[in-house]
Length: 195
Image: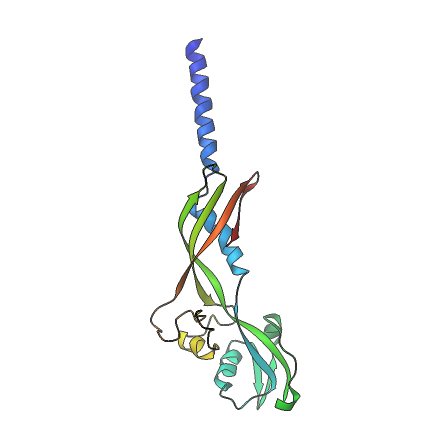
C-alpha cells in the first residue's frame, strides 16, 4: 500500500512540475505576441500630391510608385489607382495654387520584429520583462524598392532618429533598435505591452 501511495505522489509531483513549466514565457511565445504589437506602432510615412506632377525633383518617386501600382501618371497628371486608395490615408487636403487636387499619406517603412534577446521573469513567475530587437522594413507599398530608392525618397529623419532602414549615410548596413516589453501571465496565457 505504501508503494502505491508513493507512486501516486511521484506521479502527481511530475504532473505538477510539467504543468508549472508550461506557464514559463519562451522566446518563441514572446516573439509571437510582440511582433503584431510592434506592427501597430510607428510608421514612416510620405505625403504625396495628387493632380499636377510637380517640378520639384519628385518625379522619380512618382515613377517608382507607378511601377508599384500605387499611382498612374498620364502626361503631367498623377492619379491614385484602386490599390493606391486602399493603401493610403487622407493627407493635408488639396493645394489648388500648386495644381494639386488632393494629398495622400503613404506608409513607406514599418517596424519589423527581429529577435528576442532576453527574458527576465519576475519572482512570482507571472511577470516578465522581454528585451527584443527590431528594424525598419519596407511596407507593402515599398517592398519592390531598392535600398537606394528608399533612402532617396524618404524625408530627412528628425534629429536623433534614423528612419531609413539602411542608414542615410551608410547603405551597407541595416540599423537595428533594442526595445522592451512588459508581459503578464493571465488565466488564458501571456499578454505583453511595449514599453
